[in-house]
Picture 1 (tube, chains in turn red, purple):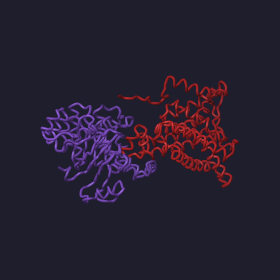
Picture 2 (cartoon, chains in turn purple, cyan):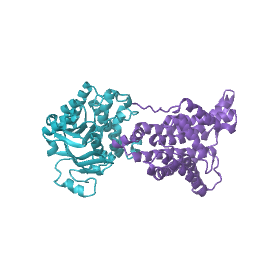
Picture 3 (tube, chains in turn brown, orange):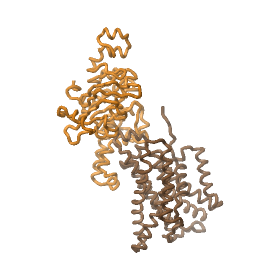
Picture 4 (tube, helix red, strand yellow):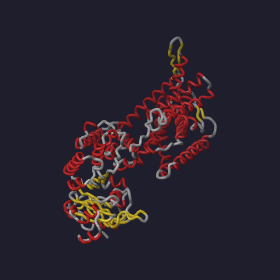
Length: 304
Length: 301
């Protein structure tokens, strides 16, 4: 029992990070119908930005308070990663918007390769590590055993929940969110009723990058290690999560992220860690056979 | 005869060719300020092509589409703008626009021409009310400073948002959908979706409302309601309406001015009564031998 709950906690933590990345995939897909393959690398970049900022603050500037340092890293990291997201959209995708469907996809793959190589060149190919943060654990008694809940796990789940609530509010109740939904449903018509479509798409990329930036920071606090090719596997997992939940659906991305995190963790815990990725992708395949538009995705119904 | 004394939109020698196909050939007409103008003609006459040129979906092969936002433009102002390479005047009173030089989103945002389509293009997944709020996006975005002020709930944004909701609810009352405000727009019955589209177009605060077959697919009762609605909108807001319509009872009932085209050429232009009795129009609709038309005074070139 305690082992199960422990894995549940671990799975939810990992799933939260996947969910944050998955939102970037799902929002961009929703609004321009394109899979932004560079998004995983934006996440990797964000982890590096978080690492560098954190080291600068604590080592160079000697900020003593961990909480203050984390908040500064969070805010600055979001700003810098958003800038990257904006530039990527501007340079690699916007010029191809009127082009055929595959063009931005190829451009995205190119951007993904560029980003990981860029980081490899400027940061070196070795793993970068950071001292473990927030490793204090709370020991919770469960039944006749106990489980541990690390402070950082608590932080990850709390930050994810808060961000999702914020995002939900933005999408549902602000004019930016309404514009995003309008563009998602009929981009041409949205332009005709006065929505600035290009700006809305830019802001969507910025929001996705900002969430990936938080995921990067949380990743660094959780694992304490990042390398230039860490964009790939978490990126693919998050993309899988978005597809599993129903690409284009925000709650779907979160649900998918949590599920992928849980599947991976439980598979590693009860079976073998070698096949955890196989398990995650198999579940995806099975779900897509029965629900082709994902768990919460709307099927495309063409009304005649 | 407001289309002569006070034209809002002047279409001059408009031509649109698709390869070798001439869809519109040297078409000229005016839309009077505050008038309800109907553009009619048999199937394939080029009516929707005219609409697409006015709203910037097509770039006309040649011709001029001049729109003024108010009366009293100095004589020759349009010609002066045409000679310049500008799309519009800035700061002039009244403002002039050359629609053939503007992309579609500028035509809707700056020249304030709103349109609906033959097929309904609402945002089906958004609520009825949200469809009308999103049409006021530009005003709201300006008030909200890219949504940041909106996030932090600044007073100026709150006020702008309240006004937007008030306007949206007012339009819902006009089109009789107040009780469906929170339903997804895609769930409304067909006739209601048509009315909602008109309300959404009006929320963008247009000077010219272009309706492409607004009565298509409506039954007699709904058509009569639509006629009342359009008249009410025109008298309340003073908006000029240009519509394409096949339902002749609607056209004759509602229009101050009717322009008839056939094969991309204007064959009649006048009040509903003038047009109704024009032999060329009758010939175009009913089909008559060329000799008979010639005998009735003037043939189709």
